[in-house]
Structure formats: C-alpha cells, structure tokens
Image (tube, rainbow, N blue to C red; front, side, top):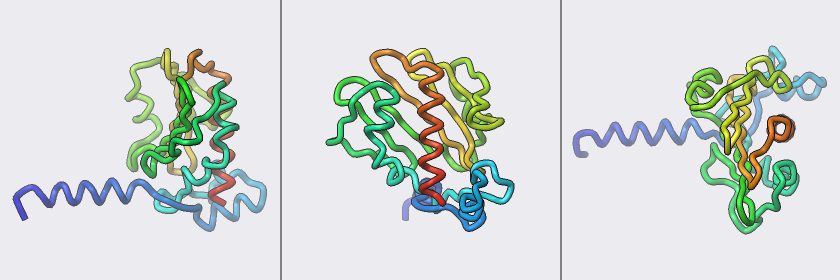
Length: 178
C-alpha cells in the first residue's frame, strides 16, 4: 500500500458509516407508540446508522413538490447519496432533504451559510430558517441528528412555504423511523 492510502480508506469508511440507512431505536419507537413525538421525547433517540431517509420520502414526491410549487420529475432518482434526497422538478426547481454530517451540530451547520438565520420554533427550540435569497433552508434536529431542508423554484419559496415543507418532511421521517 502506498503511503497515505490508509488515510483515504479511513476517510471513505467514515463517510459510509455516517450515511445511515434505516430505522429508529426502540426508545424512539416506543415514544411514537405512546403519542409522544420521537423528535422531542427525552427518551426517543434517532440513530444515524439505522435512519430511513430517501426510502421514507420516495412515496411523497408529488406532495413535497406541490408544497414548493412544481411538478416532480419522476424519471430522476430521488436518492443522490444515502444522506441526501432530491425531488427534482421537470423544469426548474427542487426540494432537497439532507442528513447533515455526523458530528456537525445544528448551530455549526447554520453558521456555515452566508445568509441571515432566524428561529423556526414550529420545528423545535433550536430549529432555524436560513434566508438564502434564492435557496432558503430550514434546519432542525431529530434527536441527535440534524436535518437540512432546502428548496428552489422559479419563485423563491417563502418562509411559510419552507416551514410547511420542513414540517411535512419531519412528520414523514418520524413516521418512517418508528
């Protein structure tokens, strides 16, 4: 093995590990069964390695696209990578849901934007709306995980549209990860 190759192998392993693929842990599932929101339950914790992202959103393309105001392109795949899902428009526009990199806190992620951020309490005490002039984001926590929802269309989606989109995404993901 050439010098430095092991660094790339370790980096690739970390990226693959951080992507996750599946479900919710038992505490969060129990929280969901008892009517307590798993994303806010003190016992409910989402686990990256078992978190279902793209498969959960697959059946909701039309609904998510309609919130943003476009018709989805059903011929393009939803999953780009396991930690990012994009509903593409047939013309211009998209709605993207990203499971933020492991170890990145909500605050750290929001600070990475070159745009004004304001609280989005509709999605939790730490949730933020980032006013990207063409591409706004809503960033919120699901247990220890950070979810970033952004969208773009011919008309820049409003704060209200983005909150509605992110709320629906959160609800879909919470249900899929019971």
